Image (cartoon, rainbow over all chains, first blue to last red):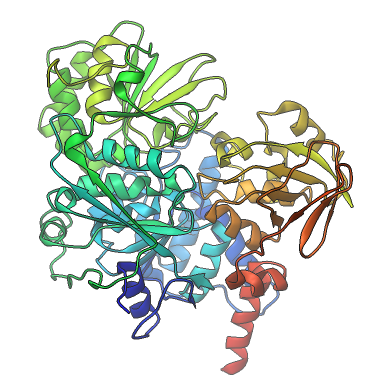
Amino acid sequence: MGMTMVEKILARATGQSAVKANDVLEPRVDLAMSHENGALVINQFNEIYKDTGLEAKVWDPSRIAIIFDHRVPAESSKTAGNQKKIRDFVAKQGIAKFHDIRGDGGGICHQILPEFGYVRPGSVVVGTDSHTTSHGALGAFSFGIGATEMAAVWALGKVLNVEVPGTIKVVCEGKFKRHVAPKDLILHLIGKLTAEGANFKVIEFHGPAIESMSTSGRLVICNMTVEAGATSGIVPPDAETLRYLKEEAGVKEAPELFGPDADAVYDQVITINVSKLQPQIACPHTVDNVKPIKAVLGTQLNQIVIGSCTNGRLDDLAIVAKILKGKKVAKGTRMLIFPASTRIYLQALKKGYVATLMEAGAVVMNSGCGPCLGVHQGALADGDVALATTNRNFKGRMGNPNAEVYLCSPAVAAASAITGVITDPRKKGE
Amino acid sequence: MAKVVFKVGDDVSTDIIYPGRFMATVLPTETPQYAFVDYPEFNAKIKKSEFPPQSIIVAGKNFGCGSSREQAASCLKGPDFVVIARNFSRIFLQNAINLGLKMVICPAIEANEGDELEITAEQVVNKTSGKSFPIIALPKARQAIIDAGGLIPFARKIVLDAKGRH
């Protein structure tokens, strides 16, 4: 019986010739990522060693990454205290892949990991963040875990008692029309599957629309697979993966490429023709409440947010700048932009995007998670309506349970910024 | 037997259970104060410790979807709630098992606030309505962690066993 991508990765990570869905395994971990919630991981890690007489040492400091992104710079003394606790731990344990609050080498964890070449095809990656699903874009099995689970990984270097997930195969045919993006594809898929449709499963992406998609686009679709409940998303690594790793992540050695076996067993196969897609909007208050844009055209907007681990990369800023060039953000609408990393921020500066966006009236903030999860920066007032390129619109998500959040692609967000209402970026007749 | 003290619907996300704006608070001893904080009446009763241990929260499908934040499980473990849901989101389920929060997967559950429920190994019996609803077992892969009382004692035993071997 053939194996899916994730079955192959887990077989290798446990030294077996074959595994199948529902087997219980303890895979070794290639990379273990945390952000500010590392403060809780440290607490739980020390609890494991409490009263054992053993020194609390992490299994391999070279395989742990910690990136500050959720509250940067610190919005409160409490967060500053958590960040200090993590800095001290990083120094004591010798953790090298540490990204502090800096204008060089800082940013959102799910951008830093690929950008710095920390993720390789075939790796097992865990992160104390649900959007760790992102790194399947590079052919890794990458999934979110909680802080206590991570504490056990730090101690043992493996994930305990993992059930091999079943896989849903999604075949994407056709070619994206102008101003229809990977974000529209993943929103459409989430609407189809529902918020629990892929719970405990992996989504494996195939087809010509995936093969011709940039790594940036693949990161978008894998990132949001968790919104259908998926353990992870994954794309078979290919020539584009090699290009990204070499040219953008500076990885010298060429990793091995692999795909699923031709006779791999899937729980479900879904085919989507992206040529037929139009811009999609996830409406309040669940990510699976997805509608084609025509259903919500004209909805009044108080705030527009471009950024997050989903859509804050250079190609996203490029399209937003192109649409906003020489135009103005509508009066009564605030536009906030958060480049996903400081490297992207610098590239956007050099290409003139930042100037274009500021001249249009947008506020360009520092790299980080920003208002996506309502922690700090850009909170909404009661009754406010936001349109965002981020990944979640749950009640309370952007800091206020009495506000509404719609999710969309960068092109839709940019076109809507000019009018102050939800607007289709395509011209009439397109 | 215990009482249903709170009932919620489908797809209750971690942003509802424990909003992101309180994520700087991490210690399990401190998180319960923000449990369901945007439901002020219920939250006030949690803060006043009004609920006896093993009081029941009843939920629909996909409880705990969204973020991996463990505060969403620890804030319910503190007051020692039992959560009965039609099903749970993966990361929440694992966090809850790791912390020893009691969960019951009961796809057909029908219960209202104030109902008295009895939970057996196979079913939930609603003493108020007289109806019974079958339970689906938690993932067998995690049973050893549940039996150990959570992942910390489970992992502690592994590091101690490794030490014993050296």
